[in-house]
Length: 241
Image (cartoon, rainbow, N blue to C red; front, side, top):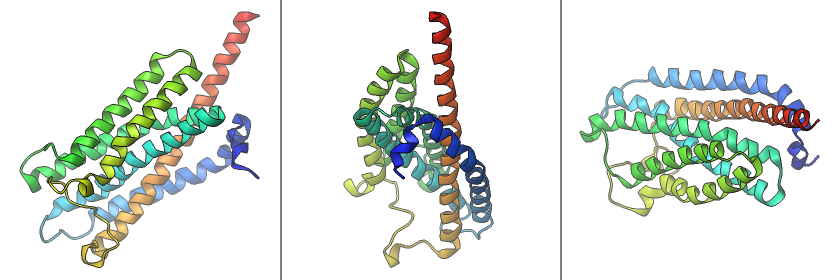
């Protein structure tokens, strides 16, 4: 079985119809468990109760970047192989990514204010993350502004490629620039920098939950886009008849 079989809309709809209930169930279970578990953890000895924002901030920020990467891959598949499902999946993912980016920015401000004494700082990672959010909005607006779906998929694919620079900067800005208020990675493989297991395990749970939540929303929105394209094709056929 080849993965390209799922580029067929009918095959995609049949497969996701069986898969979707399980993904939704896992997303709800793990995301709620991770966030609630995280907020029940003890206060940090330095940051107090504000550290618990990490259970929303880190999963949302992780998904904001990874969703753009997924959109890039889907757009490249469209440009190279002209598979409509991949273009529709990229379109469906954009609003989800924009919301995740907004959540990351908002929770970052709530976390940063008591730590830094300011709601916003033109820190390299914060600035690149804000620009990434603007790219999400531009991507959504470009899809809405172009009537021909194939032309819209081509142009948004190019925009997605350009925006990937800021997705990369959002992830690695702390490594590129030493200055800036933003801390390094919350999760590290180096033993001296590892988060305590008290916070690490619920954070892992929340991250997996957010990943499944994105997958569930992506499948729902992609299925909606396929139905919308079918309806448009039927309406166009009726007008010609």
